[in-house]
Image 1: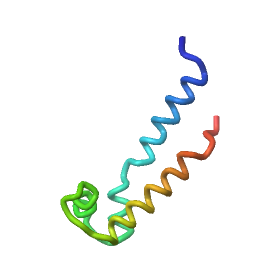
Image 2: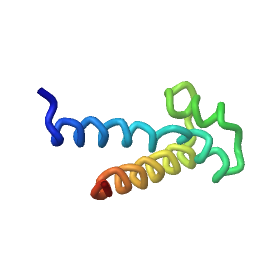
Image 3: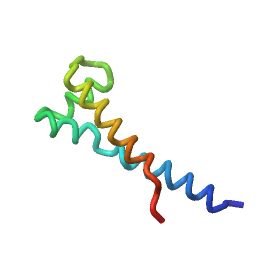
Image 4: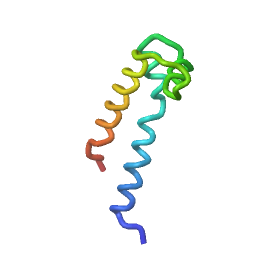
Length: 72
């Protein structure tokens, strides 16, 4: 039997996933660079302190949003 708490947890996890959608694009637009370069830095194929810092900052922003209470 699925409880309301189970549904809430499932929704929260799925919602968190949706917040990550577009991370590379947002970082690329913020830095004025190509999205594919951000992707290569994230995968470790390339190195860029500037891109790494921007990715970490964006992830922190997402996690902060994800930890806010869900409005029902």
